[in-house]
Image (tube, rainbow, N blue to C red):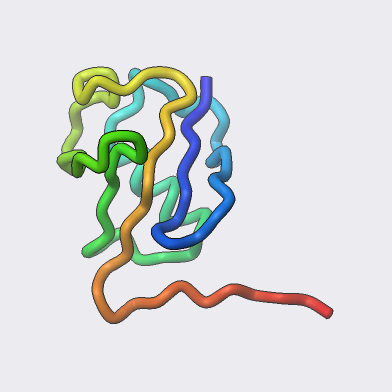
Length: 90
């Protein structure tokens, strides 16, 4: 079980730790894990189904209740005015 998240306008998608995230995980927990991974503030961030583009309500319902299962591909949208800054080494 895992959830794959891509940052809006960035590629490639990444399997987000903890790798135990799955269809029974609350959406709020998935958002927190994605924001922790990309070092973003969850306030104002959104999650969308990467296939359909439909926004997923940030609540305590499980991903399964939003029609998402194992290996779901999600898009993390950032709050306006908070761009993602890549860190490069070398």
